[in-house]
Length: 353
Image (cartoon, rainbow, N blue to C red; front, side):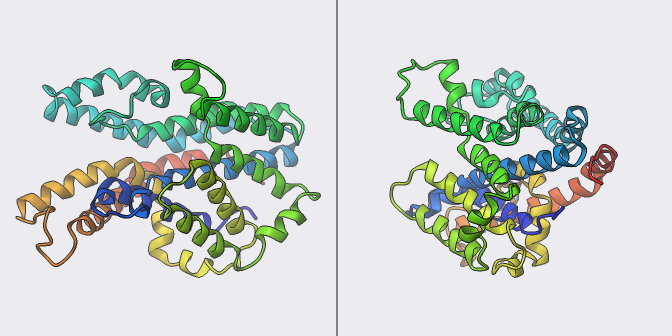
């Protein structure tokens, strides 16, 4: 298939989880309520699988991979909105945060934000780090920068061994088994995302005629996607979870959704609001914190308290819903104006037949 119809549904689930995490997660004393940040984990699984699949197919079809066209396509898709939103943040910080500690930290972090290295150089544990969500975009861009070259130069199975080695190194680094002191090198090793690596491996397993039948037996039932989605949600309800298990379950969910189109989640995923939020999920991710702040300001001016259930709705749920409505509107506007223009340019550098 040239288009995986269920990926937009998964993107919708991912971005809604992220918005929940940044609006409502601290208001409920339940483990699942605080696990919305794993929406980004699912995004990583999608990226690892999809980008690798497209690269494999291009190499098989034309005998090589055009790195120039790949980087142009990625730049046209990612850079305009990213740098546009970053410029907006710079203006807002200048006007509203010029004399605050958070504003000063943002200015100090501006170079890592501009260079997609915030996952290495920005301390995300601070009390208030403006634009901190850019760490995931930095992780993705580093993957986009290096992985196409490896796919181009290596034989089919070599990238699988490379990703497997990276997984081992990342695991050892994350749990302190390498004996490295805290510093830049350890930070880089810890920034290797298991979901991206596993997604890339999945792409190879699904593309080869020897491994596809085995994967099909596990992931290829119509009920496989809801089973893995339920398993992922159920695991996130446990008091203590391991991120690596979440990454693995996310990749299995992605695999189950793309290996066949007629699965049991396809109908809800085809619901137009879900599909549309998947289409504009990048814009929603970039704009959701601005939407959150906008809703809080609007609620305050309207006399609506986000501390008490003044309208019979839990304030956390109200903030989540209000933020979602605003960011869907903003991301729709962004997609149909700014992004649509660059997507047309991007299509000129397609390598599909």
